[in-house]
Image (cartoon, rainbow, N blue to C red; front, top):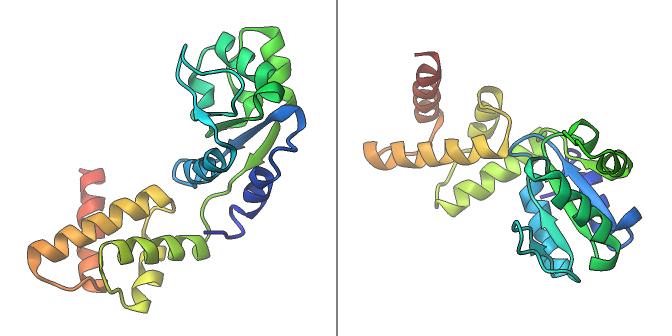
Length: 195
């Protein structure tokens, strides 16, 4: 699903294999769609997912939560990127802010091309909600989307959680998914975080 929030990042990911230095850092908040874009790239590139001590050479590599792996491993992956066919790193923050004790790693992180995904906009969240409702075989009234957008946490993760809660509440109570049920679910969720 493409929207203004992820269009630039999608274009950067699709520019592979022409990434400068063979590597790209894809950053954005939790639930913004980094894993979705990274998975599309990994399938297209025939990439392997990073596994400590077991990532083969000579193939493109996907490293999710790249800011959490060790300096030495990250340094070697970045150095190998051109010969391996590509390296896609995902994280919530830009590489320039990642901890790096190795000076050579710091310079490589600072030089990485970065594609940033913004927080999901209304168009993207509506598309995500529509898809999630379809997956659960829920028919949602059109006015439900605007109602939810004004009240929910603005992330794909939150949308997924909310649709699951609505589906469970509707099944448990034998009610349709509508604004009244959504209000109850959202109020109950708010009470959990406040209490």
